Amino acid sequence: MNSKMRRDISDLRYAADIATTSRTQSSSNSSSVAHQRNLAANGLQITQELLPVPFEILQTCIEYLDLVDRELNAYVYALPDNNAFCFMSGSDTINLGISSSLVNNLDETELAFVFGHELGHVIYGHLGTVHVQDENADFLTMRNMRAREISADRVGFICAESVHSSVSAMIKLVSGVDEKHLLFDVSSYLDQCQTLRDIPASHVDFLSTHPPMPVRARALLWFSISDRYFQYKKKTTPDSTNNPTVRDLDEKIANDMSVYVDKGIDERFSSEKAAFKMFFLAYHLSLNGQFSRQDQKLLEENCGRNARRLFEIYYTCMN
Image (cartoon, rainbow, N blue to C red; front, top):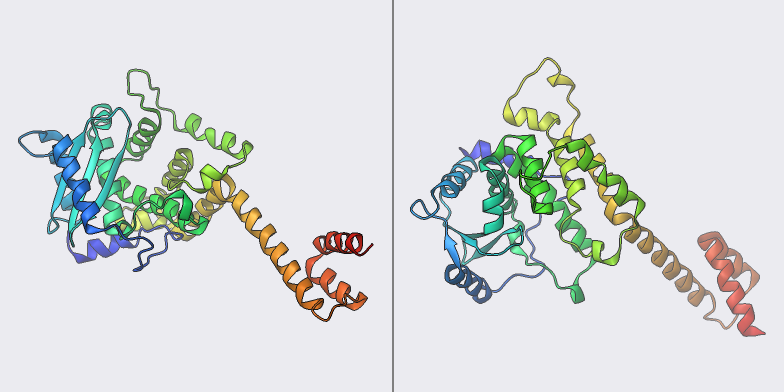
């Protein structure tokens, strides 16, 4: 793959995934090295000799994404949880970990999706930050981290080259169920979005680094019919000129992210912003020790019903 292909992959980034060179919380080199050592001590390195099938799949993804010039260490570790992750150590070393349960449950194409997803974080420069702890997390940072997952899913998809396998990998990731019990039905799975709509998001959702999996699956399905994906794959069909634009589809995805995750916090921000504006105005209007009818009118024009509540508190205190 040449530099033109790398640029093409960069063009697949989800619009809300804001590219940045700043690092909100860089992981120290010592902690990265310690994490790398832990994988080497408690995992099994993915090599041609030890794990030939995962190795070949990973190598294919590395070559496809033009990452052959980067040092990469990949390990399988023994955990029942379905999980995979990627982090940097040193200046340019990629470290990838994947749980044994995922390796056992996924077929080869599904595994390519997971490997591609993790390497997508490398391509888009997502690995400059570590997961932010609850006590110092801010909602805008977490929202951007969720957007990154949509971009990485797209890279996983182009490595798997199959919508079916990409979504089935997502279902297996979230459920831990393999083909023995799983009847693959995308439509039925996406119906879970309605349940998400009906149940308000909580503080835990706002602090999550990942969007709900049904939302991610729907976002990937939309991307798979976008004009940009067809241009990237150089696919032509009788209707390819009528494919929806990736810009329009990204707006649909952003709306999903708002409806299923961010709506509650957006409403909270709006409410707190309105309250701050009201008290800020009230404070400045009352600096002269008075709160005239003209002041009240100005406050009501700017703050509406919230101002009337403030008037009630004010007159109660005065009386």
